[in-house]
Image (cartoon, rainbow, N blue to C red; front, side, top):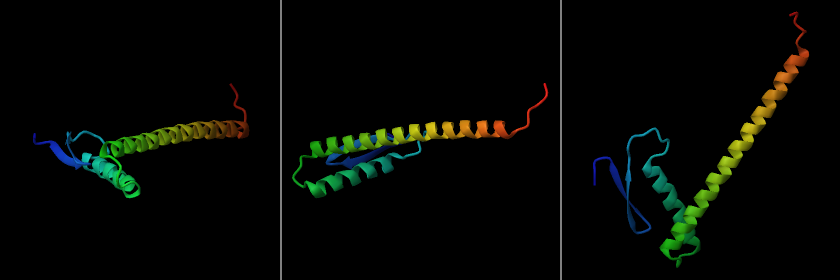
Length: 100
């Protein structure tokens, strides 16, 4: 294992991840923590479920969360654009005409 590699135990699997110090906002430790939290939640409900299936369910949950956030972000940007356009139009309607 290299100096900037971290090793984690995720559902009985040894996983190595590089902590390259990039500008990522989330550390590998935080990502693993989230995965383990989701896995424990699933295992609490279905204790006999195969670890591989748990991993797939976690992946699907996280993918759905990511897609929901992307859609929410897109909708928020569209609302912001619409509000900005309306505000500019309102200001232009109130402004006295200029002489050219």
